Length: 160
Image (cartoon, rainbow, N blue to C red; front, side, top):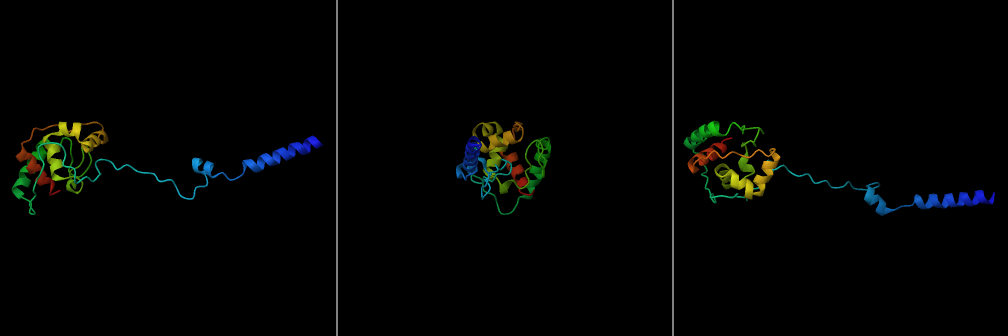
């Protein structure tokens, strides 16, 4: 009988100690937390806003007139249709990102440098590297546009 009482006493003491509050254990397991853990969501490169990034290349400054140059838009739309639509759709993600609203996320200089020199951009610009990864490693093809053609495409993008 004494053995049974001793066993019950040991069991009762073990139960009390095992059920006690242990804040460290709660923090580690997440059990009993008052506030949910903060989960940081990484914004995809195509949606990331980086207006101060001018990219890597010869274009360091562009002045955009307040009024859109319609002659340039027409020329840029033609160039875009011939050279870019295999991989880009104006308003939706395709093989590459959609250019609609691009100037809400990128500087004009970055866009020009990406059009004119995509190889260097992918090698040296962190955003271009992230875009490459987001779009399954499909690099932007260098279409060997002139600066004038690229600027016309840029002006077309302003109308999207």
